[in-house]
Image 1: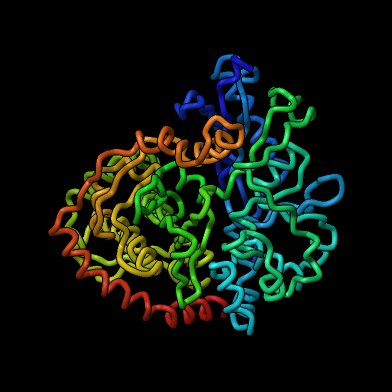
Image 2: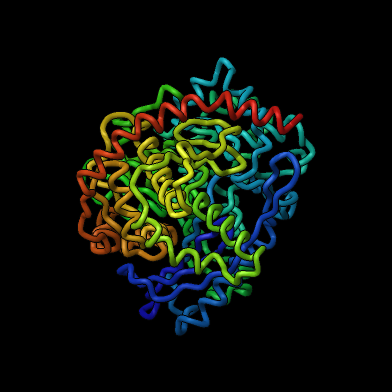
Length: 519
């Protein structure tokens, strides 16, 4: 045991599966990744192969072994987290029941609309602290029960992505307190709730809900079968982490002991989390957002999540790339990304307003509307491509402010940032000014895998509490605070009221567009 000094974190995203090695003090020793994929279908379907996702996780671990000396003998624990929401159905002999419905799947929209009008809708929200949206397992199972009941008839347990990987690693069917409480449970006691299940009209499917375990307290051994596939040692403790949003925020510093801190994950989606004591939770009267527990006793995160964050920027750059290619100009997405800094610096702040609802699934935070779509407001003949780039980034910042405002009270005192996009100084400055608070960047490269690995570190006794673990793994990696320019804060503060007003006026237009397209 003396040579076992590595915690292996597995983080399975929508498009990439990563295996990351950390030493017991949180230093990242190596990382390996494998591209994953999903496919879209009619009616808003978005699905992912469960078998391939597990194979990709195995491949990532095997690749990591080629980069870290003597990995299999040094791993003291494995921890797993993954993309949240979605429905990963498992049947007889622990085999998949078809491909998973992932969080991008929009087929449950009519069921969400109907359930949100039920007499138990408010009681469900009071228990879960989470607004019902198309991406959640709860709404997807309710929709399947009505329209795809054969799937559920063949199912023995309904898991999330990380739960599916945990099953393959340990043979144990389980989920964690974070995803259990915001889908079918109560964030206060973090167990299943009878009223919530009744509100979803799923009492007769309750047997599909797995056991809830807290991976910071309970682990299960790696099976011989999983050991043979991964090259790791059978019997190695495996920790079931919380959902990736919570793990990434934990690893990036959403809560380091101070009051009034928050974290924004600026990735394909935008996830905005504020750490609060359970007794201080404020429930949005509009019944939107999430309450997601932290593996830190007594604390949860209030969450609002945009369906699309940097996906908006990817869309704009892809449009430019395709246009250039159509004229025979050799370019690619990466080359265009290199010019973002110049475009942001040269464009005038706030000359356009952009609402970043580019996802085909609409929006889920700070409002829920499957028909929501992106738009520019204020375009004139004098605007150039760089102005559009800046407007998109400002729209991402305005959406973040919109989300934090929907959590109640004043803005957080300090915002911690993580995600690939925050490497841009200009982007950090814009986000800071839009929210109107100082920001701190985390140097943690793989925050999601780190958050899960931190849970494993506590579970195996390497740290007595999560607070002690955070003091070593997280706090030293936070940059000094960057204060936003006061004149930019004032400019965006003035524009934000217009941003919200337009957003409130757009739903009727979105609906007409959908009806016109359907016709």
